[in-house]
Amino acid sequence: MVVRVKLVGTGREGDAWRVPLPTYRLIIGFPGEGYALAEIPDEDHPKLNEHESATLMHTTDGPALIGVSTQAHSEWYDHLDARYKEHKGEYRPVIA
Amino acid sequence: MKINSPSTARAAWYDRNPLMISNDFATSSLAPAGNTSRWSYTVPSARKAALESSLANVIRETAATTAAYSAFTIQYTPSGGGGITIVRAGFNNNAVGTQGLDSKGSVGYLLAGDNIQGFTFDASTAGTLRGDVAVKVTEFDA
Image 1 (tube, rainbow over the protein chains, first blue to last red):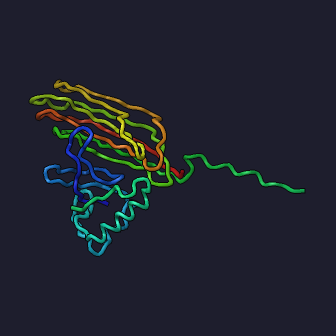
Image 2: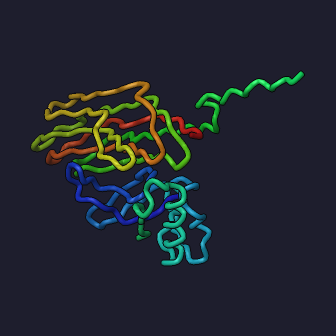
Image 3: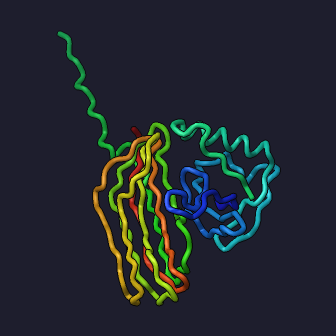
């Protein structure tokens, strides 16, 4: 699934611009605007694209999730905590 | 007489629900930009992974107005630890065609929570780069 998420970091050595997710492929980043399009594994989210609050945008890499509710974010965080127990509480991506 | 069943040998790692993973950032006409994570892979819980090959290859495609250090790298971060660079290709040279290349095979194993990421960095003013930063990984049941 493609997601539009907030970028973190400064672009400096040791603090790269990055997506706060465990596994992803950056499609394109917009550091000036503070967000990026990234592709993430289907196993890494609780079918967010099918959530009733999901807003999708067409891209050349397929539909991108660009909006979802706070509740859906919470379900996503729980999913990431369960799948990556060693990083519990660490991955808190925000759809932007 | 009691006959015991022979013990069943555990399947080799590459037969334990293997999942092949390849990450490759292949680019051309890449303009200067700060340190950017192009891809990331983290081993899920109850899984391990073999990092079987890695490559960083960067070439100056067009000259910069002012050249500075440019590099494509791969960093390994063990779960709960600090990151180290395991592959680095870079240069500070404005000659078109200048190449930095670093590749490794059979790098090692990753445990649950371990992470690898591919980065690009170019501190030049104007000019472009092309190249790749790539890995091949097999993930399997721990």
